[in-house]
Image (cartoon, rainbow, N blue to C red; front, side):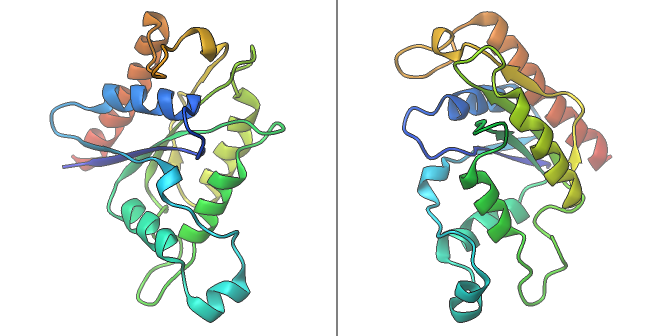
Length: 190
């Protein structure tokens, strides 16, 4: 059974990107697919540093995150846009998870797997500028990034007080991204 891991590159409480990631994951949740949603605030990691790695190996949360990546076939990634790029938290987590450990193939947590990328912000562009470099990064580490992506602008008006997406059009579009990911994995598994 194909497995999807959904996470956002934000550790902020009430993260809008985590909100849209959970919504997209609902669309992926269908027969024949297992979906797991994680909150990156539970995976605090030091900034990647090869000296730290040489002295201590991968930090515990980096190992835990990497194992989750390795045990899933595809990812739904909600990416905040920081200064026209993706977040430092997301890049740092990818950097740690990309490190080869004994008995592993290079980039084993990523290579040949699928990714769906989404973003949101309170601004009109919805974080779209951060998806371009994220798409490039994921492609460079061997992932199949789905052509469909979604950037949701003006998110503050589209969620309720608990940060659940309540706008029907936005929900429909996010569910479609999730469904596309699930269908890609089901097709690849044939």
